[in-house]
Length: 315
Image 1 (spheres, helix red, strand yellow):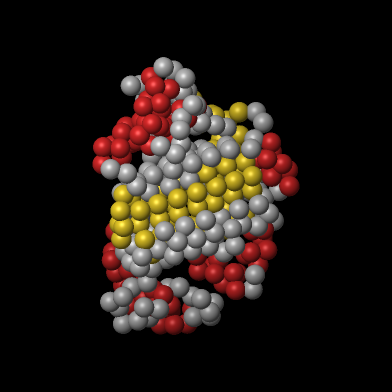
Image 2 (cartoon, helix red, strand yellow):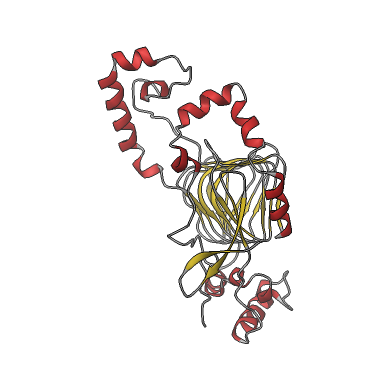
């Protein structure tokens, strides 16, 4: 069976050479500086206006729906690549790529340090992901002792204790080395309301995260994870069915693989999906790629399979 070549159709596959940079890379900003401005609301006010009205209109034209209370980037605005169609509700999103037919957000959603979210994902409101972690074996867990100047006036302390603070910063980097990878969320994933996902976790294709779960470890494909800390409660399907779903990767074809399929019966659905793929009824889906830029504007892209890279196109 021929697999479609597309940077966003498989699990978390985004081109290695994206023509975009994050707000941090453009501005060299630090989280410390951001948090000082967050205190008096300047950050929030700036972010709420960073997407221009024209950019929203262009995005809507390409079936990318973005709520007025959406903030892309943290601690600074950043480019976010969206594959149409997609719907982004209220929230703060530090995500590199979001796949087609996915929706997410609402209320106090705060998702950061995410490399990619696949297609057909359903992410409820109030999800918290990718938060910064503190040391547990230092004298204090306070980040003030590792250079995080929340008060904005601790320069005198850092000057007097430069060596100790520097040592603490390096030790923190070393101890957190295995916890600084970005989160990856596969295709057809459902994350329930109020879930917490630790930085560096991978959520496999087809997995479900229960509401209010605290996920600190990877969730295998088609696992249902719940509880505090999150544990595998069961798998959605038997192992042979999971293997077949991962082989077919129906999400690669958008909705065309699902033509004539009984969605309620997995045993009936799989043969029909395979038929659609092998018969050529299902075609690889290549949705319009809308880049919400850090400067508040919008550019439109397409995937070039021959070059295996993104190419800018006219609006």
